[in-house]
Amino acid sequence: MPGYELMGEEELLEIRDIFYKGGVLFRHGFEGLRNGCYKVREFEKAFAAAMGAPHALAVTSGTAALRVALASLGLRKGDEVVTQSFTFVATVEAIIESGAIPVCANIDFTLNMDPADLEKKITPRTKAVIAVHMLGTPARLSEIAEICCRHNIPLIEDTAWGCGGHLQGRPLGTWGEVGTFSFDFAKTMTTGEGGMLVFRDEKTYLRAAAWHDHGHENNPAVPRWEDTRASSGFNYRMMELQGAVGLAQLKKLPLVVAAQRKNKAALWKAIADLPGIEPRAVPEGAGETADALIFFVPDKDSARRCRAELLKVGLTTKILPEAFSWHFAGTWHHMPELAQAHGGSLEKAFLPSQKILERSVSLPVTVKQAPDTPKKVRSALSLALNQGR
Ligand SMILES: *Cc1c(COP(=O)(O)O)cnc(C)c1O
Image (cartoon, rainbow, N blue to C red; front, side):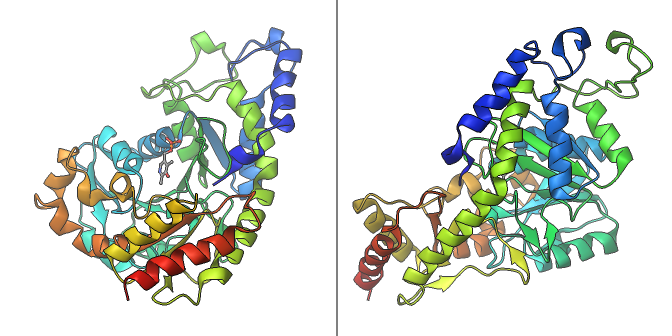
């Protein structure tokens, strides 16, 4: 979960620094007032270095990052973009907002995109694929990237939940043309609201940088109000306060991920031998952010009972099973574009995903997990699972 658990003195010092140096809160210009203080710029550089990516662009949210990513790829009306049925609404919203048609592939037991179903969803109109690393576990990127490459379709990684994770040693977010990140308050590192994109190609980066800033090319040869431009755009600029917090949080990221991995392992050790529990599938070589511990139980009722027993002792679950509707395309009747792209019935289109999700349970993993949590989780789950037998 948790950059917010470690919010403190380091973030405050970075913010103070802005005010000591003149209090300029805008990322561009005001050179005479800011005494060389550029927090967003510095945050982008540090983030790119941490991810081993050549370019990074900070934006206002993870949702904005997805929208900017699609704009940078030059999508047109009527193009199709394939993502997955289990994701946050934002992934599909960004596709709709860009004028493209949202298509969702079903998931497999990784709870991420099923590569076999992706292959089936690709048509001549498919112009991008967005793979999501839901709840901190990498998607099957080797297979997905191979399929995209074979069809010559750019891959975007929605890394909102994968920040600080890797697959086969390669950081999540850097497998595709573009990786997008969210720093909202529930994510592994946070700036309150905020997001980032990383790019492997300079031209895509430059298009994105201009588009997120009304088309401004920030041409150093002219003042900003006489700036050159090649396209229209929008405003998704991050502000300096967020950049400052991001700099402090980024330094804590390795610590957050290490603590979550350790705490997740302790939870799993406590429950692995309970009857009827199977672990979430994980691609080979996955370095998870360990944001949550997910496992499958025999059926929907068992999943509900697990949550009920955890609540009784002051613990909880995270998204699965209680809130999967916010994260499951099978229930998104408020998005007519989606039903239209899937033969009219979301229930039918995503039944295979639903069968997996409804018997999934997700336990939140925190940095400051209490030492007795694994034991308490075990006894609650053991009660829940034995009731069904
Ligand atoms: C959080 C999240 C987003 C959106 O990020 P915001 O910063 O909240 O706009 C997008 N995709 C996924 C998978 C997310 O979990």
